[in-house]
Length: 73
Image 1 (spheres, rainbow, N blue to C red):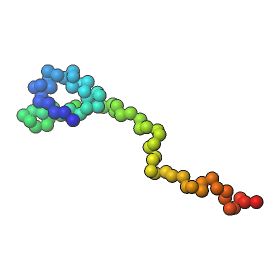
Image 2: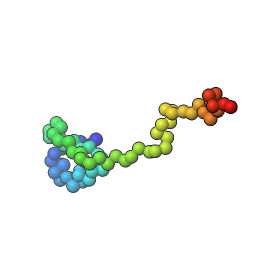
Image 3: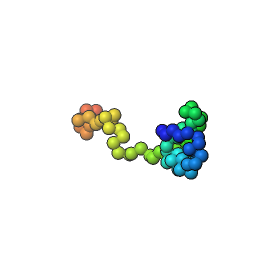
Image 4: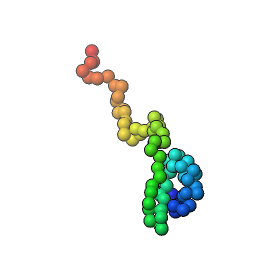
């Protein structure tokens, strides 16, 4: 999160827009007091990775593929 004084923000508004669109939050201050927060409405977060997301949550028992007693001949 960045902070910038309003007088500087007016001169750099285009650059601040691009930073906000890339996911940065910008706090615009006046007399060192927070005045505005500039953020993008559209989330730029990416989809979480598919592989490894359930690590240490799901496990397979050692006897997973052993025959079941109920189905023995």
